Each structure stands twice: as C-alpha cells, then as structure tokens.
Image 1 (cartoon, helix red, strand yellow):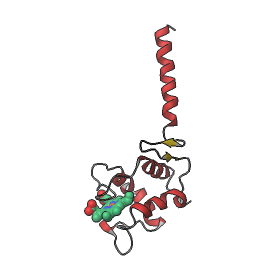
Image 2 (cartoon, rainbow, N blue to C red; image 1 turned 60 degrees about the vertical axis):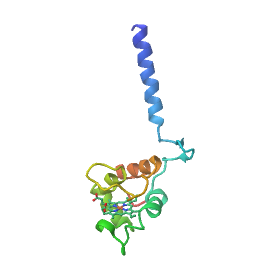
Image 3 (tube, rainbow, N blue to C red; image 1 turned 90 degrees about the horizontal axis):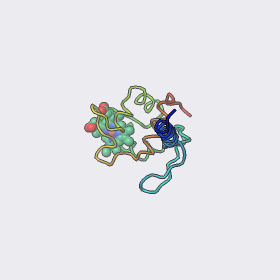
Length: 123
Ligand code: HEC
C-alpha cells in the first residue's frame, strides 16, 4: 500500500470514529448544554418533551389538527404513521411543529428519533 492511500484511509477511519460519537454520548451543543441521548424512554424523556412543547395544543379539549398527544396511545399512533417525526423535523408535506415556535433542539429531536426507531415502546 502506498503512503497516500495509507494516510487517506487512516483519516477515513478516524472520521468514522468521530462521527459515531456524534450525539451518542453526552455531547455539548452550540448553546453549551449537555446532550445525553443514551437513555430515551417514553416516561423519562419523550413524554416530558411533549408535555413541555406540544401538549398545550394537542390535548383532549384542544386537539389541533385532530392530533392528540396527551397519552401514550395517541403519541404512539402519531409515531407509527410518521406524522410525529415529519412534523418535528419540518419535513416537506407536514406542518412544522411546534407551531409558530422555534424547532425543537437537535438533542430533543435525536431522542425522539431514537425512541421511534426502537418501535416507540411504552417504557
Ligand atoms: C401553538 C399550538 C401548537 C403547538 C405548541 C404544537 N402544535 Fe402541532 N399542530 C397545531 C395545529 C394548529 C395543527 C394543525 C395543522 C396546522 O394548522 O399546521 C397541528 C398539527 C400537528 C400534527 C399533524 C401534522 C400534519 O402535517 O398532519 C402533528 C403530528 C403535530 N401537530 C405534532 C406536534 C408536536 C410533536 C408538537 C410539539 C413538538 C406540536 N405539534 C406542537 C398546533 C400546535
């Protein structure tokens, strides 16, 4: 193997290591707070995010867009049909959520993404 290829491939290996650490462990975001996505349970992380940012507009008395997020079954349904991630990631074809407010921070989005990828368990 010539030196150029060796340097290039070790660079790539180092890059992939760096990349695998991204958001996996405690990580400092731009605004200086620690992002820990090692734990992402419904009761521990997901439900608290939804109560802080979503529930005021998505409950039994105010189900905006006929979407309720005030109990596990409702959140699970919106996780399964893709609306939850579509809305918080601001994907084309979905309404951007939380409505008329800044997008959730990358840490909270990452927590929800991981929980959904895990099958959105009631844990
Ligand atoms: C200030 C009120 C408000 C807040 C806060 C809010 N929503 Fe909404 N949401 C709405 C309204 C109103 C709609 C109906 C569609 C529209 O008008 O954009 C909606 C629609 C939705 C939909 C259906 C989207 C679609 O494209 O079909 C989802 C899913 C949703 N919201 C999730 C959330 C989540 C998750 C949060 C918190 C991160 C949140 N919303 C916070 C008002 C709100």
